[in-house]
Length: 428
Image 1 (cartoon, rainbow, N blue to C red):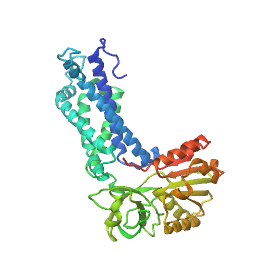
Image 2 (cartoon, one colour):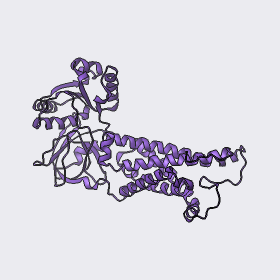
Image 3 (cartoon, rainbow, N blue to C red):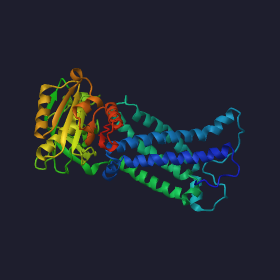
Image 4 (cartoon, rainbow, N blue to C red):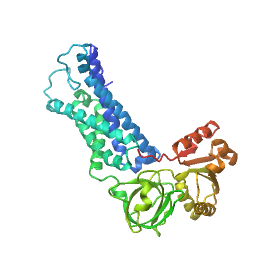
């Protein structure tokens, strides 16, 4: 609509120039929103349903932006390719940033017009860098450490693309609603990129601590780590998580908090499972007394609803938020009737005993589902065990596919969509 009225003659070049503007606006627009989401803003997190949902949106906006800039690049190169193939005639043509009205004496426009050459060159190289960096982010075979270190470079690429966009956006658009919206997005994205690059991300929410105790369960490959925090932690709700840095070289990793908060006993517990190149070696690397940096808390998987009944389902290490909640309920009783399903491939006797004790203290009914003994939990089994399931809210944390299957089954059989809560614990 900002391009109306359309050129009187619509041919390949004029349509191509319109599409370059359109794809460019879409690409830099969604990337700007994605940059703002990267700041982990608490007020924005609550609007989007948690940092896990915010990061999912961040990821798909990044993918959308990549597709848009690829189409933008194709449109830019298309005349060159078609000329080589002999399908169109070569010759002088105006770029996407040209203006059909007249040679303007406007100093701002003249200044921006003078930047077209460098803006195009910088934009092209930024495009190549963006493809590489987003590919690293999406392919999980690249270690998390490499992902974290390279992903921050997208902020540099983004700033280069901001320069490209400011110089090449059709000048007439700046006086229209489109220009106002784009200006706000670019300012917000630029501020976000600077915060990321200067190391200010989450700085006010970081607290130092030290490892106090550790307990390793070798059969399950699970490590329980208790950390004594220094002043600064403002507390957390059960079900939230934090970014934990045990090693500066490795960087931050997100772990769900497995303990209730007591300001008089400033300790926090994390339960981690060997699931990758980093967590596999945590039991060997971590030493009592080691310094730890914790940033948070984050997340909205906090069991807040008004239903008379709740059903909790923890798949594997997904039991962690429920452990924290049980510890909270042991000191803060609730009138809700709660059934906890813990689904696992194996459970050591000591772990089972801890869960049983926590469930009893919190007045919760514990159902342990072992794959080899009981088979996999599905919607049919759940409905049989808890006949009053329709009056409950369901809280799930575990493998995403497992959660989707349960959600689909329960929705199909009448569970309201707003009563299924799932933690999407994936940061890339």
